[in-house]
Structures are given as structure tokens and as C-alpha cells.
Length: 616
Image (cartoon, rainbow, N blue to C red):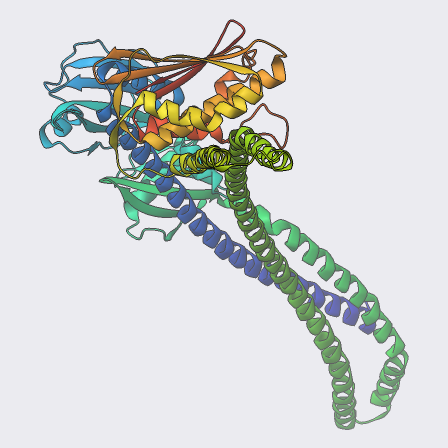
């Protein structure tokens, strides 16, 4: 191998070494950056998962206690009905029991098995605590032996509606199997989530392997900083600890280290390919430089060899040293310049990769901010939509009121118009005298007074009652009939009433009258749409017991389709064509009767029409 070949080989070896060292450094930088970013994302996800799990548990607690405490105003028969519907409507509730003041069950219901009636639960803290203290009880989170899922027991005293004393207790057993889905919803793609229960992490909810469970439990016992990322050789993981009613919980987010390593492989491969391309381009350039200046150096060497033969050894040595220094200086300068150029190119390539990573991270942050902004806009739009629908409902009610006023005023206005026309005719025929004037004025004033009374009726009807009072069901129904009777008569609808017995109840009379008006308006619309003749509505009052009343309203308007009858009390649901209904009337009626007045409202199809039953 001659001098130029050795030089090229040495330079290529140096470039190859520089290429390998550069790849090693870049891989270390990218790995460190990716690990820190993933640890930060895991910590943020753990905090978000903890917040969502805490919110879900808080909702279960609040809803359960709200349902239990609201039972105090119901009779025993109504309480059983409400408790039966509770376990059907709430899938997370797996068991409900109700006991008397001694701890013996009088109602039980369960999804996997029903506890016996009359069983003694007085020894269980979940029952004895509300019975003895008169306050709510929140148990510790446990694991169901058969299902293997965590659950919590929530109980509250059942107060007597007569004197407010503790007459029993209701305990709800709520499954917490949804916690893993709740935590997973806040976890980024590629990561897993688990919920640890207890200070030592001994109980874990989540779809995890035995090795992952061992890792999470061990790490939970070692960490003392809630929310801090916990380093691991095999996993990247983070914790967020929180408490709920004495229950210690921890949300854990983690991912295998090999998954984290895969996140940088794409960037590293791109950089390696770019660096290798620079290396391949540098080799021909070096060969070109060496070959370009090889000939003068070789001639100089040949002359040096000839001179060495002709000169003295000392002179040849001095000449050889001088010529070699000059040659070495020139060669080193060229090599140094080349190496510096290659080093700059490698450094610039490294900066470009870091800039790409930084731009990608900034792009992801911008996308997240844009998504949060869009979610906030959608929430605002939905809120405004709900407010707009309520305002539309109020405008519809005002329109209905104006329509009823028009029907009430039509007849007296016609009579007043005829009276005025009669004055003109009497004047032309010279029939006006004192008696005529007096009778005409009295008749006109009666009509005007009737219209004024109508205005007072409407104004009093739409006033809001703020206090619970005793009121007559018959009188409240009569108030509603005053408003809509003229409209029903104008639509050829016959009203049949059975008010042989009146009932005095406690509640809000004007709100009750509005419920009756809503139901009569719906019946009127159904009769107009479905029947040409023989339109009838019947209203009756019954007294099933002392202090209780039942109102039954029946029409022959064709009934409600069977596939939608279960949804008629839902908010914004209507079977009317667009522009004729808001879907708020029956929903508000149910709220007034059941939530505000502690009653019950039901609707059913009978024969060729519909029956609405209200119990107070």
C-alpha cells in the first residue's frame, strides 16, 4: 500500500469512528429526552386519572346519599317501589337492603343474589352506624370474593316523615369495577393505568399482568411522594395518591421501557441515515483531495531518495527532516480542514434532529391546546343550546297563554261590538232614553268587568308559590279550567268532570295548576290531530286514603306510540312536529309532582286514548 492509499484508509477510519461516536451521543440525547418527556406525560396522566376516579367516586357517593335521604318523605309502599327502580336504573349498584330501627331487613334486592327478608344486620357497622348516630356512613373499599371487583358500602338513616326520628336505614353496595375504565380514559396511547387501593397498594383494579401487579405493588410501598415519577429499569411509571372518606387510593400510569425505546427509533433511524449519507459523500471528497495533490509529493519523495544517495548521511538526514516537516505540515492542514468540515456537518445534522424533535413536541402541544379549546367551545355551545330551549319553552308557554286569553275574550268582545252597533241603530230610530242608556252601560260594564277578571285569573295563575300550603285539588283544577276552557270549547272538545269528593293536600297550588294545564294542552293537541268528532276529556278526583289524593285525566286522542311512551317524561322529548312543541312540559310536570311535591305521576295507553294519573 503506497502513501496515498494509507492516507485515504486512515482518513476513512477516522470518519467512521466519528460517525459511530456521533450516533452513540445522539442516541443517548434522544433517549434521555424521550424518557423525561414520557415521565412527565405519565405524571400528568396519573394526576388526571386520580382526578377522574375521585370525581366518579364522589358522584357515586353523592347520588347514593341523595337517593337514600329523599326516601324519608315516602310511604313504605312507595319506598319499596323507589328502591326496586334504583337497582334497575343504576348498573353500578349491586345490592340494596332496607332495615327497620332494630336492624331487621324489610326490603332486599341484589343482582347476583337477594338477601333474605327479616335478616338481622344490626351487627354490621354499615347498618348500626346510621341507626345509632343518625348520620351517613361511607365504608372502606373492599373486594368481592366471587366477582373479584372492588366495591364500597354507603348507608344513611331513614327518617320518619311524622316526627323526624330514625325509623330504619338503607344500605347500598356499589361496584367500583368501572374505575379501571375511568383511569384508562385519562391515559395517553401506549400507556396503561391501574388504581391501587390502600397505603401498601395491596388491592389493584386494572387489566394488568401478574408481573405488572408485582411491580406496581412494590413501587407503591417504596414511594412517599404522591404524584412523583418512580424510576424503574423495566418500566416508566408515575403515581398520584388521594383520599376519599378515609379510603387511600393511588392512580398509577406506566409503560414498559421497551415501548418507550420504540418511540425514538423513528427519529434515530432518520438521523443515522442522514449521517451515513454525509459519511459516504465525505469519502469520495477525501480521495479526490489526496489524488489531486499526490503527484508533487511522490516526485518530491523520489528526489529525496536520489539526493540521499548522493549526499552525506548527515545532510540527507537534515534535508529529509526539512522536507518531511513541510510535507507533514501541508498534509495535516488539509486533514484538519477536512475533519473540521465533517465535524461541523455532523454537529449541524445533530442540531437539525433536535429541532425536528422540538418542533414535533411543540406541534403536539398546539394540537392538545386546540382540542381543549374546541371541547370548551362545544361545552359552551351545549350550555347555550339548553338555555335557548328553556327560553323557547317559556315563549311557547306565553304563546299558549295569549291563545287562551284570546279564546276567553272572543265572546265578550263580540257581545260588546253588538252593543255598540245597537247604540247606533237606536240613535237612528230615536229609541235612546235614560233606561236604554242605563241598561246599555250596565251590560257593557259587565262585559268589561268579565274581561278584567279574566286578566286577573291569568295573572294569579302564573304567579310562583314559594311556600308549601294546604290547598284544594278541585279549586286548583278549576283555576286551570278557567284558563283553557274557552280554547277547548272552541276546538269542540267536551269536558267531563267528577268532583264529587274534594281532597286537601300540601304543596304548591299554582305549580299544580300548571301541571294540569300542561296535561290538558297535550290532550287538546292530540284530539285535534287524531279525531275529527267526538272529542272528550274526563277529569276525576279520588281519595285513596286520608290526606292523599289521586287525579285521573283521560282522553280519547288515540294514545301514544308504544315505542316512545317510556320517554315522554324525558327533557326535550316531543312527538309533535317541529315548531309545535319543546319537550319541556311533561318533564317539568314530573319534576313539580315528584321532586317538589313528593308525589307520583304516571301515563299509560287505555282503549283509544291516554290516561294520566297523579298521586299526592
